[in-house]
Image (cartoon, one colour):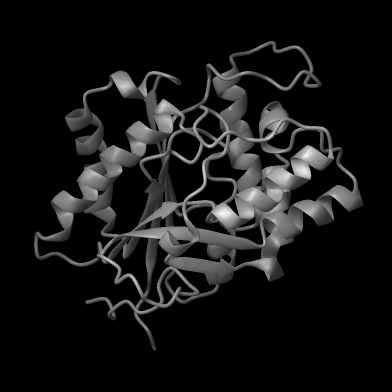
Length: 271
């Protein structure tokens, strides 16, 4: 029997974790000993709110924490460990990187995950919080990986294939929406197709990813702009989240290497 695998995801805000790795978690939920660690640097309390959401009578961050819990309950496989670092939303770029790195590093050192996932240098949307938490996680991973302890076998960055980005942009134009600009903050930023090192087919569990995604109700204008909760749009979203693309940030990936089909594929057995 294979040894248990541990997966850690480090992000900035609630809803950053709603897709990109949620399908992978669902695919591995019944693996013996599988453990999923989730870290949020902020509670998203400074974010905007969907205009259709009722008036707020409590802090947005408190609502978004509940939405995160509801999302993973709807998904069906909540994290085994979840940590809030409790930084102010929108302020991560001003936190000393050594501090953020140390706090993330403590969690990674305790858990020794086989795979760590976070944002790449573009933050997927160019959001400064995303970029800051991704950079700090990269350093924490690097600091720990050579200490002789177990785990820390692979570091991956969430990504969007340029070919997918271009296809989605054509759809936006056809529907009268402004196309994304790859250099504009808050628009989706693509990476060249050849940089994708892992692409996981999660189509069989895509409905669970969508169920979690839709629980982020205050952020509906961000995660599903203009999408009403009906069967047709649920099916569209299921197609959109049916594959999870990742860049392998470590170990170095040969230029002609085959694209892997799972985050744990090809790793040496733990221990």
